[in-house]
Image 1 (cartoon, rainbow, N blue to C red):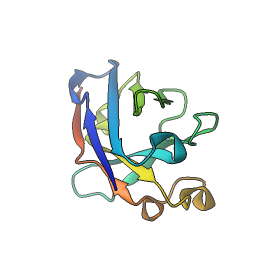
Image 2 (image 1 turned 60 degrees about the vertical axis):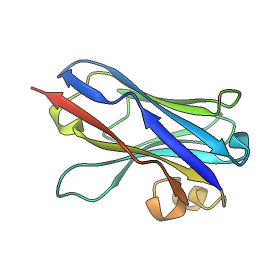
Image 3 (image 1 turned 90 degrees about the vertical axis):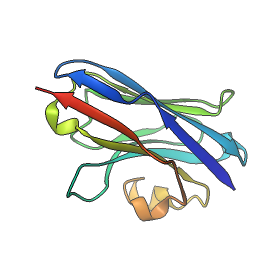
Image 4 (image 1 turned 90 degrees about the horizontal axis):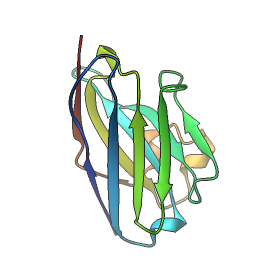
Length: 128
């Protein structure tokens, strides 16, 4: 069992920055990959970024490349999403997810169906 809790969301102006955190409890955090997804109203949940269990490999959606950075601190059981140059279209609920079955790598970490534990989400709103 893994429990995930996101924090760090909020309201920010376009061009601003936010850092999201996701802290895990339960199964050994350093043994599984982690991902960030987001869901805007009326849209499907979409992949944003992911990191391997070690943090040595990272993956990004095209919309996040160059603006977002995913990182993890296994000692703190926390994964981060640093978001810079935010745009109104980044407005969504952001979710962290854990891949404890090592399934996500087969979809390059992009398929939400490969993740078996999810946090409750944190709202990010970017005003224009």
